[in-house]
Amino acid sequence: MPIVNRVADLQPDIQAWRRDIHEHPELLYDVDRTAAFVAERLREFGCDEIATGLGRTGVVGVIRGRKAAGQREIRGIGLRADMDALPIVEATKLPYASRTPGKMHACGHDGHTAMLLGAARYLSETRNFAGDAVVIFQPAEEGGAGAAAMIRDGLLDRFAIDQVYGMHNGPGIPVGSFAIRPGPIMASTDSVDISIEGRGGHAARPHLSIDSVMVGAQLITALQSIVSRSVDPLESAVVSICEFHAGNARNVIPQTAELKGTVRTLTAEVRALVEKRVREVVDGVARITGAKINLKYERGYPVVVNHPSQTDVAIQVAKEVAGDANVQEMVPLMGGEDFAFMLEQRPGAFIFCGNGDSAGLHHPAYDFNDEAIVFGTSYWIKLVENTLAA
Ligand code: NI
Image 1 (cartoon, rainbow, N blue to C red):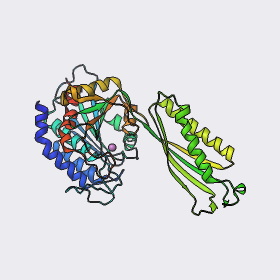
Image 2: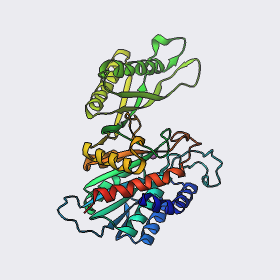
Image 3: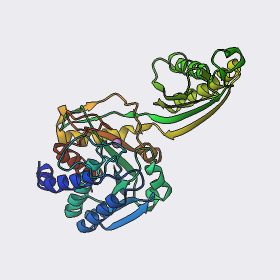
Image 4: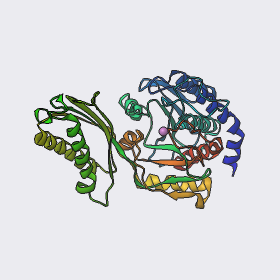
């Protein structure tokens, strides 16, 4: 296939960019070097328009096709990659490992950025489409809602983005294959912060105290009943309390305790139900124990919901790139992804590109698989040429 051949020619450059970005990981919104690197490449490629500083450090490039648009209603599509790394000490010992101890590209955003740059280069050279291909490089996917920040800065209105597509690498999915599903594909991620104020005292006189440790234990147990007894068993939800801090002596009942956790759901209805039940359980445990309990419940990333007809388009493109047998329908993941904010505003689809038998995402031994580059890059190119065919 001609596209894959041309992308194969570009592969060494894309791999070199990927490894350069890997060596220089940056966190959240502080992706200045990476953003400058991206903007410089887009300038070299001859993008028609380059915008920087959207969502603080996001970069956008616009590539105009050379074909006449005809009657088509789509003016352009957005392709999105993320640029940020994670606060992890890298354990790969690779020659291009992170040069900054404690920061690491452990989610493959180095690969995402490089593949989208590769597609931008190809599309700038060939322009074999009608309308605008808008390449979006966002900061702060890992917990900072960089996608929402770019939208607030006008991303979707300033540029001709009528549809929007995202891609993530998938460890455990063979290289050369893709996985996707219509509807919910990744979960909403809400956070729960609970502070318990009991009454401290002597361990031997519990009747004179309100034991914040016991209150915390009751809360954790009662919160587990939400998934098992309030949510429809055919729906999905996770309530994980992952931090419990209390006490510093074996003979003292502590005055306070702190719990922190996360709630994951796959629909707006279940998300609302779980939030309501968490509030009720906290109120109830406060009443039965006499402790003061303060709950901070914060909504984070929404559910990533793939739109059906754009998912069909993505499947078709993935099949053209990888072959029919190498595009699987997947079950949803309970991890989160801030591309959800873009899919709330525009129709589109999010797809996983196989990363082979690598360590898992966010693991210190993880590495993006450079063999996946030709597939991911070809997917972006075909997606533009098919969606924006004249
Ligand atoms: Ni990621």
